[in-house]
Length: 109
Image (cartoon, rainbow, N blue to C red; front, side, top):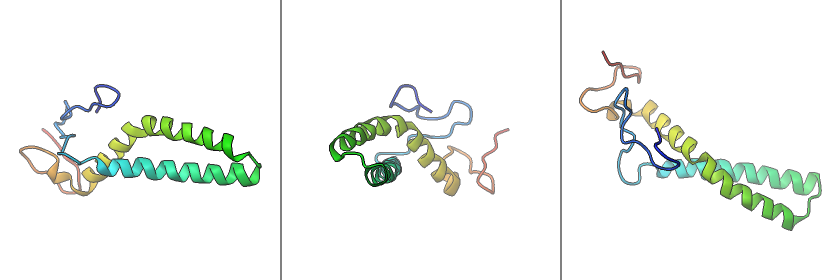
């Protein structure tokens, strides 16, 4: 799906699935990335702060660094997950020229 760290191909070379759907299409993937990051950071903060009595400032620094690194690392996975969810629910809109087969799969001959 990706040609570099952040740049995506326009379509899949084998099945011609369109990745880039339009401006703002992958906004939902940002919500996935942020939501998972917020969940992990919140659980980690509560457990380390109140169960293991970590001091707040070092914990804040470590979790802030985690947020930056996790956001970069999970960027590709969030986009792929967003695309997979959209393809599952609206598969007919993804392929040029011919509609998707019933059941959400797209078969080429």
